[in-house]
Image (cartoon, rainbow, N blue to C red; front, side):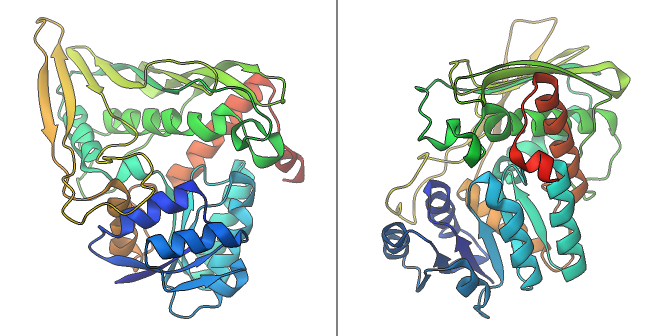
Length: 360
């Protein structure tokens, strides 16, 4: 049983606390927030027994086994490193860091302290992704040629919003582009390793070329951007993200024989986006569908993937199952480093930098 402590009390902390209620292996025992009202509300809504006013107090709590760092991007590296040095296993909200240099420091701290560290790409923990990898490895659509992954929506530009504030790590690439980037690397990895053992962890591949363009808005962060990424063996991926551009959210993979698509790639098994109040324990979890269409027929097959718990419960259970061996199969250290390096290159292509880049 993993006893969780949560650092931060924002919206994603609430979603995670809600998900852990349905976990088979964990429970939240403490939360630390510098905003007393938020911390108190979260603790009361989810029956979290201990509330701390500083992050240091939570890290000193000997009952806490693992820490979920739910803070905004610029604070991930500092508090993940502090948690590792305190001997806590660490789950860090995505993106792992502001850049790959910070990510390397975080991984080094976890390695030196002998603790588990994983980037919180929750969608990777859902059985939908394992089924997707099996289909690609098994040649369901032949040889993979092209990948398209999109995560984009439209909202008014407001510098007070984290999404548009450069000092708070705002911008579409870091906040949303990290999803298509990680998905394309996952799919390319499955395509390039068809005989990879099922227990070898999540596949991934690193690109050989990145070309990108994007629009930097009035608050000096990117508001929408696209990248064309080339992987080995001629696999091409188109990645799109945006905060001011409403596009269909999709993931599709085209091969020599057919096409696979995920109608709900990023938030499978989530009946509500943000649970303001706890859902009943007998809440039914929605099934997901992988769509398969061969090139020689107009018929579309539906491959149903069932879920038996909340998406974030899968994530928490993944940490519990692997904290002893230090391996993060859903998002390994090498995978996270490769993803951060891809995001670095994407930002470099459009001329987007943050203060943390010069510090690194």
